[in-house]
Length: 367
Image 1 (cartoon, rainbow, N blue to C red):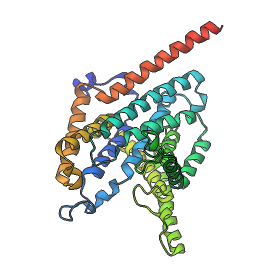
Image 2: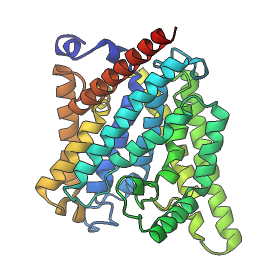
Image 3: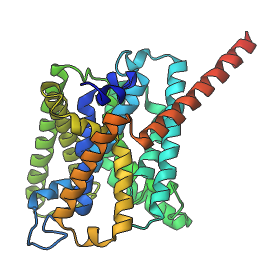
């Protein structure tokens, strides 16, 4: 690319794994569909697109998996260092960066809640999960996978227990902390997606072999989970709540299917982007500023009106999709990183720099 594309490209961009940005675009555009799309369930049968049912629950889970991937890429300097070989200074610096980003996401999410749009804002939930992930960034993969499995299997039960305790204690509505058991994106369940992402980020995501492994593993997890759910339902002769595959049901079935689908989508996005990088550039630009676009979507809904969600029209969804892609492409071409993404990067990097300087001075005095 030439001209404006070069002006909007930084050394940091050159190290990006472009397929991950395409996957982020799938996630954020999918969340738009969940909020504004008419699949015939939330909207009138006329003009409905039944395939949009796939947008309920899954895109936000994919977004969480990709957040975990990003944490590992920050820790490993985009895959140039093995996670277990990261020294304590680099680990501390990464934790500071992630903590700052998590704090800013919490603030932004709570600010968007003020508009009282009829959608469940995910940002402050993700922010808390960023903070919860800090102790496990350097854990070995088998421990991360083990914990993710436990949360996927028991997260729904843990969520209900925590909610019951919080209600009894009178703190069920405590700001930020209530995201641990909140009915939209409870951290007790959703940390499984973050942990899976942390493991995925350790793979060589620039290789074809990794794409094949991720795609195959995702297909196996999705298929085995779906088949097991059917077999167990037949064995029970009924549909127990914990076998539900409904979105936001926080069951092992939903978690397994979401994880499998997320791995497969990431693998496909990595492969397609390597095959046709120029063709995928608009989606790469869209995914590179997913936070900005998500925030703008909430503001658009607040300005235009709740009817966009309560009475969804697919023409409005298409307009939002196209507008987002065009805006992101133009911004990326002429300016570079998205505005909110730039804020997160600058704030987290400068805070980490200050922390590292303080550590160096402290070490110098102790010698």
